[in-house]
Image (cartoon, rainbow, N blue to C red; front, side):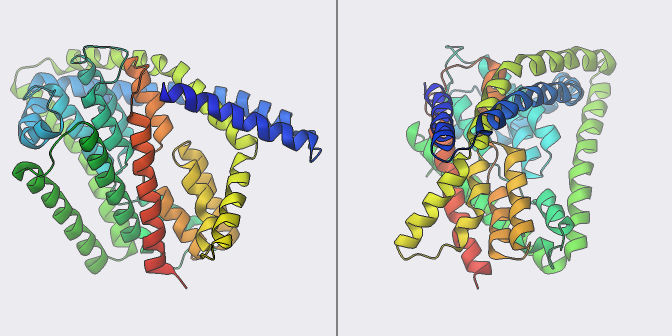
Length: 414
């Protein structure tokens, strides 16, 4: 029901603002702007789905080899003690455990092309355990809220954009640690929010050990990259790790398949067939969500919201430097490409090394695209009732936004 009201609300807000612009300000082009945006978003949705076909086909083919070779079950046994506490409804050594771990690992290293197929496979595995196929299960909500929090170690695409704008940032990697702190805070918030809702006790020895261990690893990696590597070194490290991991996964799955006497070619074809089916299945969900977001954006709703925040914070006597970067934060849950455009616009307008330019980059790296994730993942599983998933995601996003603002003032305030 939450998605139903949110989707309806996007249109209502957009229409109210559009009629105001038409009647009060005399903007006679507003309806054409919105309509053009609707048709473009509908076309983009289908294009995006078809672009997913090749990637989905490739990774699902290799995933099928990995399953038959036992690699997914092996990974499940490693993460089983920790995931068993977070996902008590998922049986021990169930393939979903390995699929989720693959998804989180790909997200962690910024492997978007790999994360989506792994995530969709995880959602499909969890759906086999779901007694009510149209309502999100506890396990599906926990998985998707954690996924949407977007924990990423190295925001390489953001660093690259900061280096490519004109004029470029003097030190494109200076947002690395702030991004890491913001996205880690969002992920921890997501974990605690859903655990509280599902009455999962995180203060058990095994969960505390894993959480503290992951925190320590992230902290050590940050220290290594920041102390021992320069900008070029960080970019090279990220490239080698990201691309090398994909090739390593393929190699391990193929080698394991041959060792287990699996017909790897036929297994790849068998698994790959699902890529086309999933990509086609999510088209209606993508069209519905991206069109609603386009209507909201084209109507000028974000300008109204930004001006409202500026007035509110200035009337409270607070510093308003951060307001210039808020469009990126507001757009991020709605559209990845839209928030990226907002970030680049902020860097072009204020400068890549300005407070607004840096904060917009931190916003961009603090979470995933919530409504896109909802549309694609729940859509692929045929979930209609998302329960408390969207409010939990948005609350985690809010924690990420607030943390991003605090760390930006800590690192970059003038």
